[in-house]
Picture 1: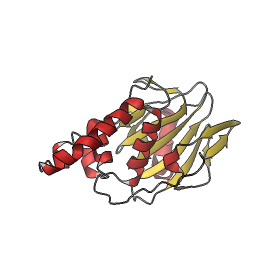
Picture 2: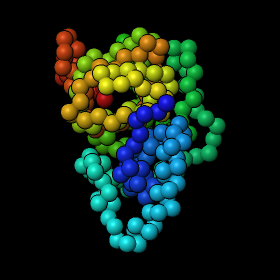
Picture 3: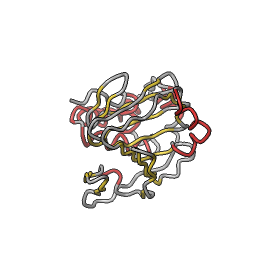
Picture 4: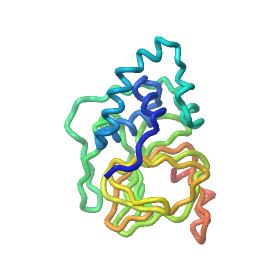
Length: 214
């Protein structure tokens, strides 16, 4: 069962078209998995006009400063109608969210049991990636210099906070430290505005090149 969802503020911004491309895609992809949030979005769509008529500003709804800082991007998403896009990684075929079908993907960059493909959105410091972790893979213990959103698309992983299933929408910031690992492999969509900071053992040698791998 999905336990981690976008905040009400983020869902409201989504319904009002106020999110940048990366977060709009991430929320859309979450909605493909989550019936609960789909109902919430429908309810917000029905009521948002009333709040706007009453001159209620979006900022009054926002309970997260980071959300407020990234909702001023006027990029609009116009998804194409097409068959689901599929990728094959390590013998596993994954169907990607419909929201990704209108954007480009880079070639995959492999780092041990990890592989990343950049999603071409041109949002400056905000980078969006597909992240594949192979069976038995672990990301060393790290914190985040900015925010990191992880949407689990397929498989499972766990960290110090929980065990996650497809559709979980996990928002972390510089106050969080964790080490994700997976027994059977997983595919995630990640959005971040700065690099990871490794905090333990030999992995710390990666910190000088952290900008290259977020």
